[in-house]
Image 1 (cartoon, one colour):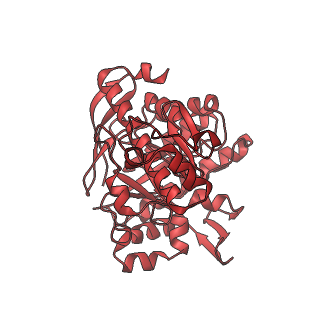
Image 2 (tube, helix red, strand yellow):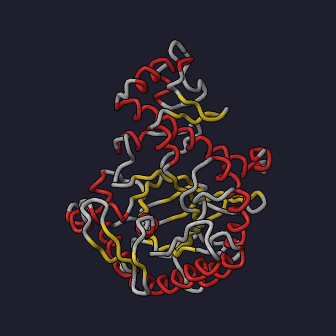
Amino acid sequence: MKLQIDVSARDGAARSGTVTTARGVIRTPVFMPVGTRGAVRSLPTELLDQLSAADGTRVEVMLGNTYHLMLRPGADAVERLGGLHRFSGWDGHMLTDSGGYQVFSLDPRLDDDGVLFRSTYDGDRHLLTPESAVAIQEQLGADIQMVLDVCAALPSDRQVLVDAVDTTAMWAERARAAHRRTEDQALFGIVQGGDRADLRSESARRTVDLDFDGYAIGGLSVGETREVMLPALAAAIEHLPQEQPRYLMGVGDPLSIVEAVALGVDMFDCVLPTRLARHATLLTNSGRLNIKRSEFALDDPPIDPDCPCSTCRRHPRGYLRHLATLREPVAATLCTIHNLTWVLTFVGRIRTAIEAGTLDALRV
């Protein structure tokens, strides 16, 4: 199920357009909220479905986390309950990662066959291989799944990054051969290489040679500066097909999004907007705002008078501060509604700027 991007506008290397899957159409650039266990935290599926920016930009793709779902409730359970879409009640697109990023944060045992790790839930040992990662995601039933890769920490010695590139390429070939659900599920290869431009270029070429349905860039935005990230990203993009979607994994801060779009990236995901919301930090055009601050106790205006979200339409800042300081669960929901709507609006502005040829003005 090779995905193509139908480009409707360009501004330098930046592009806007659509990607058509077996489920429907995704407008790009696109930001994809993370639903780790089949749900965006603090936000029921029906509310996620209702989010909309002023220009009509909506949530079109939600991510599911393979690591967590394979352990709880298990891929078999999700499959028996109709797959992730029916399980979660989400009719939009779903993308699942391979679980590799989470596994490698657990100091697992790695060899050519796969990665052995202990569950954070009960301590049981599990072996994740390129083939089993594909099979699990086929059971979960997302529209797009990712290969198992090796995500090295940054900074790392060059040899660590070389080994990660080699193992990722070997595992990618095995994943490609193992993928069976090809009619309704796309498989993306992942480019690694850390912060080394030459390794990023090599990894991109080796991944493209395997002819995946789309391409992702992993192992960036893991603590390095933007000045380190962007040259490595550019080196990878140079070798990725123009006609297929490009996905930068784990990037959600606005400045990094717009800079990556300027380099030619189409898809993004990150927990940042929802995590900030759960800590009462709100995204605004003037920067981040912590609603718990005492100055907002008697503040009557909404978070942002120009924001179309239901939180801004109904509630003053003083009410949100009241809920957040008391740790009322609904505070996280209201803040999440706002932050995701703000990101949708921001991505809509990027798309409009590309169409108008004014993206550089938005980057300032």
